[in-house]
Length: 112
Length: 114
Image 1: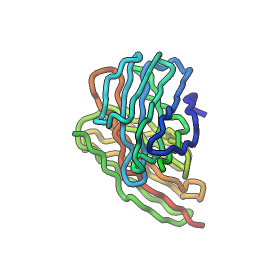
Image 2 (image 1 turned 90 degrees about the vertical axis):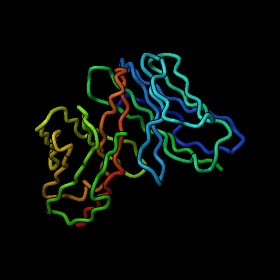
Image 3 (image 1 turned 90 degrees about the horizontal axis):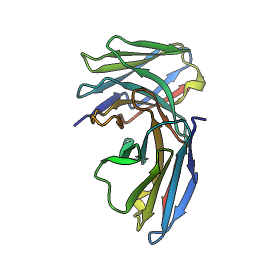
């Protein structure tokens, strides 16, 4: 248990659905991240938030929409996804000035 | 663009043997991470290496960092079956913003056979 909690753990959605992934941490960290892990590519950084402000968008398609209402919560809103978006989505958090980055358990997303 | 290359990508070895996983990265970075991932699970932090010549050990795993060569190694001593997993190295991307994501290698899928 790393202190970073993701829900749901598994999600199956149709291409026309809208769903959201949630991540929360109560570690006092100021930075939160979304990563995508698919079968055919290395772990990819998607978004970075620092003190709830987005500091990096790694050329992610607009069908993925992140939201960070505060430093403890991070969402990833999904709409009109494609089957190739099926992957494990990992959330992570860190505290500026310290080296550790902690990952959540991930949400296994399947788009049908 | 920061690139991280691991080798080998797949390794099958016998219990009791020693082996090394290599991680090369393309640009200067001050943080090198090693993670373990079991099937269907998230990433477990193993080591964070912060300086040239850093060496850290935990049980049968030892990691080292040579920042001049941009090379890190993960050495496995007298392997046991429980170490079977996928091992990732990752390098911090210095965006200068104080919150920096990681660039990962493709991972080394390690199978240790009795």
